[in-house]
Length: 270
Image (cartoon, rainbow, N blue to C red; front, side):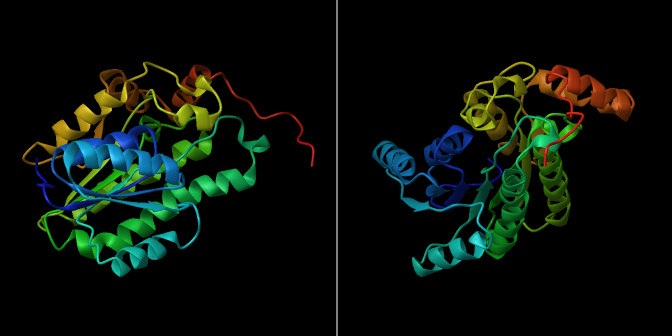
């Protein structure tokens, strides 16, 4: 692995379920101590007990609402008070919605932007001095939706496009520092994500397992010189080529049809 995590401390957000809990298990297998952050304390404690019993590593649980403004500095202060220094950061927390933009709940959309974008940027910035002290890892979870406009998931896809481009830019800035920076873009995956979205209609294309996403991620990290980003699944990689081969008009229309051809209603009641 380009990053030797054995004996180091990895902070993972959104760790109570889905890919976050799988990342926790994989890093623990490689000897990393963990800090797990999410809203659901019971789920975090259950996961922490499992990992401690199986891998004999330290696991710190911090239940927090990561969509709250200013949470990054609050988290940093809490860890400083506990004398815990972070060596690697996995920004996994995020959620999406499905439906037309005009009738979507504005508060929920802005909460998604806060969590998927603002909190991710703040956490990356707040913890960057710690990550740069060693040969750590900054890994941000993007999405296959980051590679094209996605009618019906307009805000979510736009936030993930930000994550992808932001992370790739940091990869270039971090050259020569010893810090590994990687954006991981899963496609539709069998997790709780679509329960939060509220429909399986948003899962266009082949559904992967979380294990497949983990295997892709850690194979990439095991490379001597990891790329700035990686997409999980050959079908997702092929679909990402679409915007390069066709016009943006065609791309938006094709993706719209794949996700149920979501349209704005002719009139919106105020």
